[in-house]
Length: 69
Image (tube, rainbow, N blue to C red):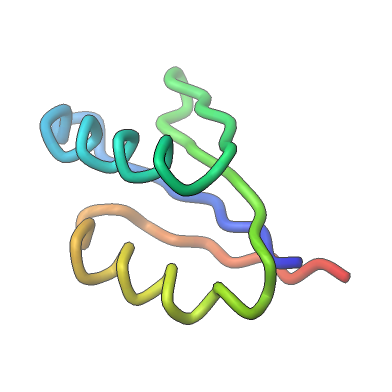
């Protein structure tokens, strides 16, 4: 499994809505609004495609990757 932590800028409400819509369709996630942090886990086999999508469509989001067993 791979865990992703996404940090987003406070001044990006429109892109945040699009990001949350995307995540709602594909993942179960936890959103900590006060810390501007979203985190979720996925299968390792999906990691590269998810990272590509996040970087391509949500470049303002800082992606932190945590590898799990």
